[in-house]
Image (cartoon, protein in one colour):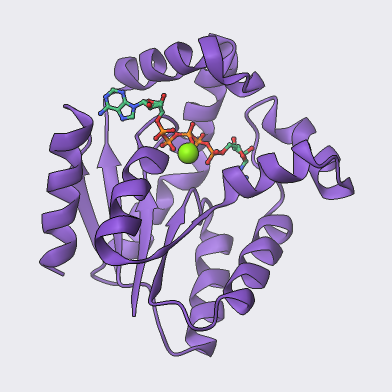
Amino acid sequence: MLNLVLFGPPGAGKGTQAEFLIENFDLIHLSTGDLLRSEIAAQTELGIQAKSFMDKGELVPDEVVIKMIESKLAANKTAKGFIFDGFPRTVAQAKALDSLLDNNATPVSAMMCLEVEKAELINRLLNRGKTSGRPDDANEAVIENRINIYNVKTMPLINYYEGKGKYRPIKGMGTIEEIALRLKSAVENL
Ligand code: AP5
Ligand code: MG
């Protein structure tokens, strides 16, 4: 089983690159951001609560996203593997993922970390914001907040996975195709 954590700051290209990886390696894509946006679109209780955090660029509480991942893992027991996109984002989430996967004796294979310069992240997100309708792409202050939260709460996961020998930095600048090739060969070399 191949369980990849696709990691990186907002706008790093996690969602874009996940599309190539699921095709190449026949994996199931689990994006907590996409799952939360579906809950918002369906106007569920969970979605209404999550929206207040997301619109400001704050993290949704750990227990909410952990439960979502737990139920998706339970619903896909025969999968060849998963791409976790935008999850885990805190050390508590990473520990929860480890214990959820250990239950199935199929640990995280690697954490692929897309490295992109801050100015490029802001450009990409403002650009998407012109058409995406995502409130968290609409203004630069919220984008800055998302990047700051990534630096404070999410970056510590680099040490967490490095300590387990699972950290793989990948240059995330360049064309989408160039980055896809880098990722593909990094995964093939695992
Ligand atoms: P989430 O949906 O995960 O958003 P994010 O990580 O902030 O960032 P994005 O998804 O916007 O970026 P991405 O890396 O996927 O890049 P993409 O491929 O889209 O989370 C949203 C919110 O939900 C969070 O703020 C939080 O509130 C909540 N949340 C989610 N997960 C959570 C968790 N685990 N715990 C707590 N809260 C959670 O690319 C971005 C743009 O750039 C696109 O337009 C794309 O076309 C373009 N692009 C991609 N690659 C390139 C390239 N090489 N060159 C030029 N443009 C490119
Ligand atoms: Mg994304």
